[in-house]
Image (tube, rainbow, N blue to C red):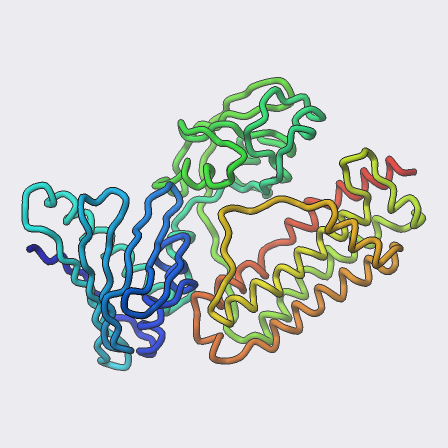
Length: 398
């Protein structure tokens, strides 16, 4: 047998290093894209990466804060193998060592070298996530500078786009690659870097896998019925400065969202409740149903934060879709402009108050805390993206 070894020193408490190998949320933050685990002998250990690579194994041994041993069996491996992770306290931190035992024959030589490189790279990310909260898979990934939106058959017809698979742009980020390349709102991406882009959002990161900021790629898209091809330079990704003080995080988030809320409220000035509830078409939202959609976004933030703090983050196979009955229900319970805008502000306030009250033990879990905080401190793309939709819907109602 051959043992492939990778190790790294991590400046964190022992319990957090150990948790990184036995908790689904922690595993997603440094190793894979989806994980589901049951950390006990013979308990499942399913790990999945975007692109349909996965390992379906189980835990073999667990010695709390000392050792984790698991069975590794990926969808490209001929037979199962075993990985042992040991944790050794030293110099105020933890030495994490991984020993992956594989068969000692020529057919495994290439696989063994791949394990060595991948485990070393993953441990480098483990160190970054545990010490700083920053996921290098995101930090080192280039930015396109787009705000993706949904793309339905009805939208395709309305936009005059002759395809039913693609990614519609809801907006663009000023000064970034997509805008500089000439892309516009409502363009529908169908190809990038030689790979197809479909309505499955995961095709986007798959297309630019391995690319870095500064690289130039080809982008194929539809603008109406016209198919276009442009060259786009990928932008480098700025990582937000997330304060590891929950009260300060809430304060900064409030400063960012307040102007967007005020601008949204101005959109409704001079309009009646009846106009705000009028749908421009049968399957399109009214202006107040758009506000309801924004409210549900804030409610999701509450659920997301609870899952992270609790260590049981909800996961899905995709982004899901918008349910018309859900937005309709929120408007029926808050049947006026005043009530709906007040509900949106209450939802935002609840998220910010919850943020300020984040317990200190969760703040120490930097991977989860930074992931939540960085999302909170993003520019208000969601509200801004829907602002023009609200204006257009109200104008149509008038």
